[in-house]
Amino acid sequence: MGTGLRSAVIVLNKVVFEYMISFYFLMWLIRDYKPNFLSVINLNYIFIVIIFFGIFLILTYKRKEQEKVTKIENVLLYLLVVIGGILVYIKTESIGVWSYFFIIATLMLILLLNKIILNERVL
Image (cartoon, rainbow, N blue to C red; front, side, top):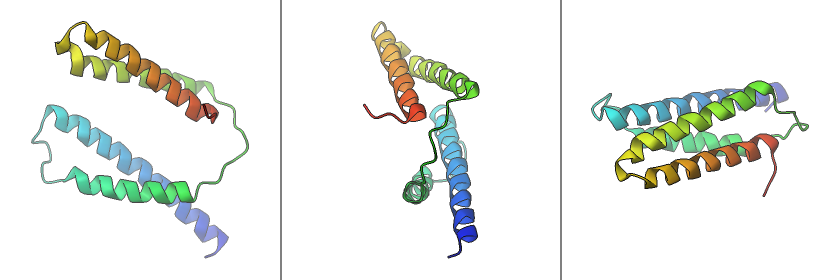
């Protein structure tokens, strides 16, 4: 396979993977609150396709030079942390005081994992 075609397939795979995983998580969140929403779509099949594209994406990944983390990436990181905390609170508010511990643990976990991924450091 030519270099141009190979890089085009890799870019196409990355784009398809990003859209599929976004669609999957959006459907998963919507179905959590409205169970009959688009019930004809089986999320398990979508998940299998996502795993296939994810494995292909990992196998074709080429590491670039160390890129600096931009300000917008940090803003998105903190936004994801806040959204994750809100979602955990919504799901665990019925258990009382323990929900605060779960929120703090989730916030720290999301923040640390995203910082590690952005900085490409291994613990």
